[in-house]
Image (cartoon, rainbow, N blue to C red; front, side, top):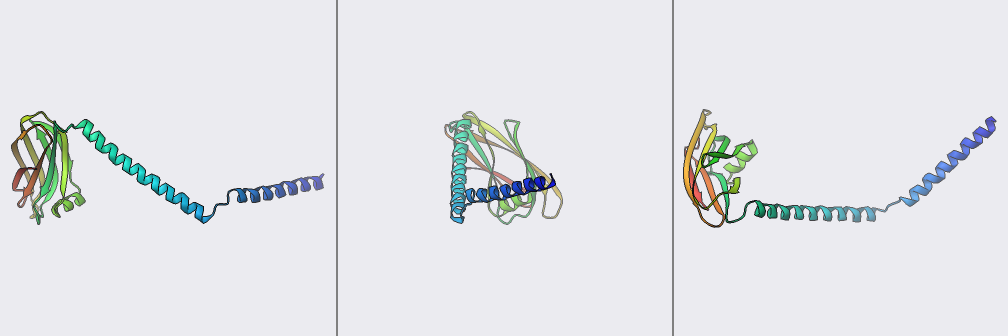
Amino acid sequence: MLNTLKGFILAIAMLMLAFSASLAEVFEVSKEQIKGLDEQVQEIKTDVLGIAAQLSLLEEKLLYPSNTQVSVFVSVASGEKFRLDSMEIQLGGAPVTHHLYTFKELEALQKGGVQRIYTGNVKSGEHELQVLLAGKTTGGSDFRREESFKFSKDVGPKMVEIHLAGSGAQTITLKDW
């Protein structure tokens, strides 16, 4: 009986070796096939990213039709070194957005970058935009600034820029684009 058991175990071991060898042949994939598969995956990723970008544009057109769209951008005068901590934007007295700045975002603004802080819908006509800032001056003291601006919205998209200049954003201007 012990010999029969040994023979049975040996037979199972041989079958397992044969089975694994045949599996290796079935699943043997060449380097060229792997490379081709990788290229296909990269193409699919590129296609998906392109489709996502197109969907984003379509979503923006649907949510913010050009006849009611208003976009607000933020820029900082070149060479300014104050630290902008947060900004709140209000339209007609109602808060529409609030943003806390990271070091990288502030650094990008100081290097001439422009941030789109808000996109929304407003009717044609006169509107009031309030800007509330908080941060630190180059000397390290805290500052808070608040400015109100009036702008006119016509048919078609409206784009305005909030431009910050001076130590502690002493000058806040609104520019039409």
